[in-house]
Length: 225
Image (cartoon, rainbow, N blue to C red; front, side, top):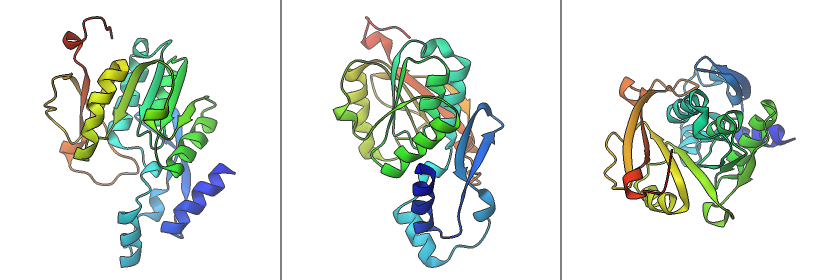
């Protein structure tokens, strides 16, 4: 039923578009319902373009930073094992799913957008993983051990959340393909990861290099990661 509702939302934007079960070569442990690229390989009418710009179905893509962070988590399960994790701006839910698959006791996919929460739900069902959902970061109750976020810094207004994250959780991981140097005293860059958005949007090579940041532990001597 949720897949049908999500498809209906998609058809409001692109009547002939569809979602396809997709296994990503870089992330074979997980499958996602993503936009079928066969329906994107055409010229869009001006009205379609307007609708896509006004209400982009971002939840139908696995964005490069999300893919890169999910891969890193699955390769480093000790970073999430046994922890209560919140994935901020979860979109398709790929990072929340990776956290749960890597052993997080609780993984919360947090997104203001209802279709995105539907997407994380059907992707959790597809992978037979149980995750929780939230629509507002500030209403999530209880201790958070780790906050993760991918591709949320493109909007400068979102950077205020970096302060909220640092105060709310002992550990924070931020992955972003657009921000090469994060001038924030609470965060340090720890790695550069590879990640390509799927379906492929033909992004420049520079946007396939993902910076991984974590909360600067020197500012919070009682924390570990």
